[in-house]
Amino acid sequence: MDENSTETITEETPTRRPRWGRILVWVGLMVLLVILALGLQRTQQGPIGIGDRVPNFTLTTFDGEQVELKDLEGKVVVLNFWASWCKPCEQEAEDLEMAWRQYQPDGEVVFLGVDYVDTEPEARAYLAKFDITYPNGPDLGTRISQAFRIKGVPETYFIDRNNTLQHVQIGPFSSLAQIQANIDELLAQ
Amino acid sequence: MMLRTIKPLLSITLLLLALSLIFVPAVFAQEGDPGAPTDDEVNAIAKQLYCPVCENIPLDVCGTQACAQWRELIREKLSQGWSEDQIKNYFVEQYGDRVLAAPPARGLNWLVYIIPPLAILLGVYILYQAFRAMQRPTSPETSTNDTPSPALPPDDEYVARLEEELSKR
Image (cartoon, rainbow over all chains, first blue to last red; front, side, top):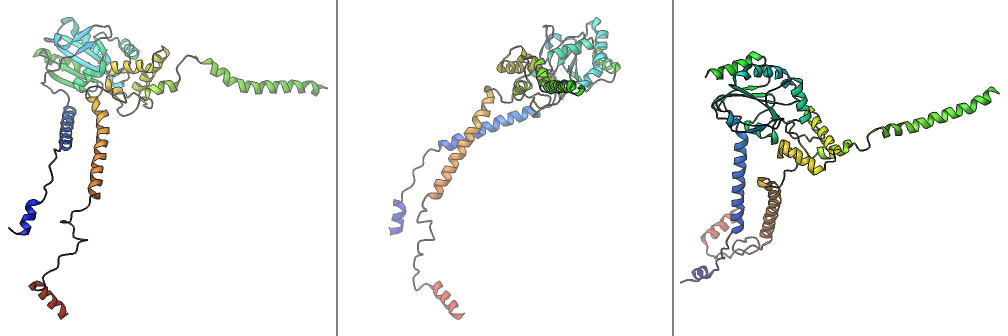
């Protein structure tokens, strides 16, 4: 055996220490990426699509009454998002109230008003100004508007008897006839 | 004679006018409600809140009607004797956590408070390791600058050819 080969054999090999630090960092990064991915996926989800089942929610009205969507199954629901500071909401307020008064006696249609990011005295003043009589309540914690992922106010959702979304109106209605047409279509189903 | 009687009257009138100019603003200031919250007090809370309608604009500088209503609500609550925390809690209850400038430290929000210091610590550790690696003396096997190259045998054919070529020039 020559001298060189002896040197190679006797050379000290460095001891491999466990690389817990690196493993921890990689695991941490992976967890962070998963959280980011889930967050992105959530934000990328658009509004509830036509034909999708509407998630259940509970609206506590200004009168203290609790209205749960699942209890309204079998009826057509007109869900209107509004606010007292919203000028376009004022354009449709009277038409919505007129439509409600027209359909209320039959009991087939329910109107719900969700007051988005508003202050109570101004909201109550708005309801009084337009003499709105259908159930209205604040969107506490903005839970309902987040569930529907609304982009602004006014927005109106037409939900059929099976709690399925059938039509969305972004912005104010142009006329009472437009509201009626949407409701009549759902009543005919 | 006439001038003598008018002069003191004129002086008194001027003095009264001057005094009225000094004291009128003070009178106006006293007319306000001493218990009413000031704009500064309202804004001190408002700047910690964000209206979901006007994203990324603090409530104290937001110009929309919705934000003006919110500021009035803060003023109303302050005048009712509510504390800053009570008002902030009320807004969270009404409009959700997202109205707060600093998210509450619970649930996934903890990540916001944990990740930045962890990232800084990790960066410091990586830098420390990098500096240590730079300061470590290089092993003799890999070093080529300081150690002389081993002498080539004089009868090396390549060296002979090289010298021959050089001598031709």
